[in-house]
Length: 188
Image 1 (cartoon, helix red, strand yellow):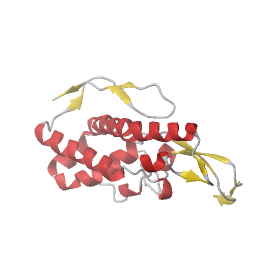
Image 2: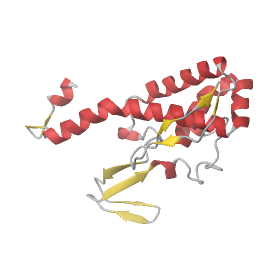
Image 3: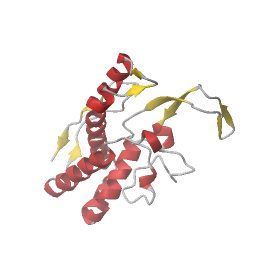
């Protein structure tokens, strides 16, 4: 954090609003998104009992199932970026300086990448192609930690409570930025 706080750009300090945004992102990023993926993943297993059965019969699928949860839940709804150069994406011209909105749920269900992308499948062969952690220079710094936390929770949870399932409709967090659940009642 001190490296960021003391970074100079073109000889000057970073503006306070940029630092504030960065530090806020550092504090909440891995907390909210991981928590939302955990509850969303449990909901996915509840809504798809045959997929939960696959995990119970073959625990080696848990790492792949973790990627599928990240893809299917897609905790971050969107993010905005600014184009740094002129480009063209699928016939759409984008000029340097244009503001671009990335809809992660759309990308993570893209039928050109994920066959039956709307379905939750713990054995999906290309689940790792999800963009839940972003990509390239914007890849989440905590991606490995987040993946590990989700994987371990479901390894242990399913060992101890193989019949866990929700017993009521989830209460969703009202947000245009994060897809989350504030309450998920379960039976173990």
